[in-house]
Image 1 (cartoon, helix red, strand yellow):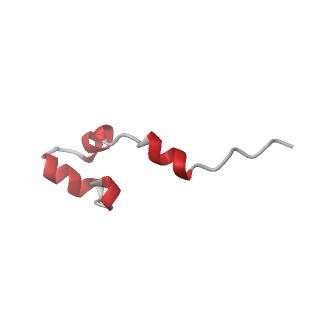
Image 2: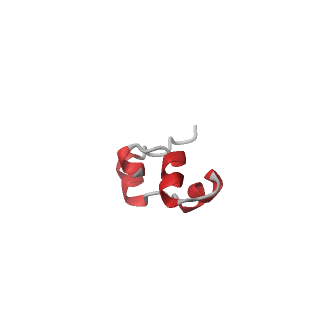
Amino acid sequence: MLRHGVPLDKIGLVLRHRGIDTTAYYAKADVALLKQVAQPWPEAL
C-alpha cells in the first residue's frame, strides 16, 4: 500500500491499528528500493 501512495493513517484503518504509531512501526523501509534512489555520500573537503 505504501508503494502505491496510500497514507499511513489509511493503512492503519485497513489493518485495524488503534494508533498511527503502530502502523509506522510495521512500515519498514524497502532497502532494495532505497538503493535504487540513494545518492552517493558527498566527499568531505
